[in-house]
Length: 94
Image (cartoon, rainbow, N blue to C red; front, side, top):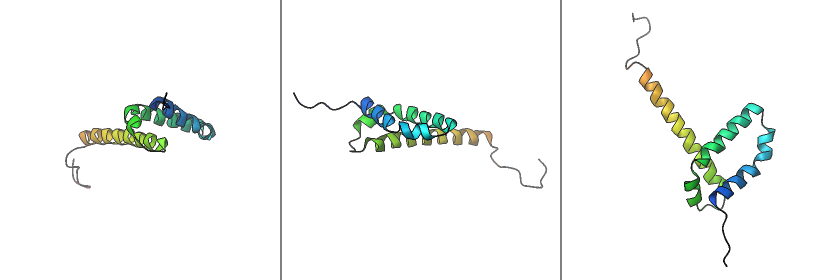
């Protein structure tokens, strides 16, 4: 039989375990943010599985960045829908 490769989930969980000491050294509120980043990256396991990088953490980090960008774009869109089209000029009546 040939050598079997670990699944993307196993690789992902291994990377999360490698960073566990770093996580423990963070403040409690930062640990929660750290956990959220890994949960966000987990949503992209299929893409991570297709990454052929010898450093799997690169794909995990890109997945985290993708989720952060998605959230930023969503918040930007919401902010634009809340702002008036032409903000009033300072000193002019509203």
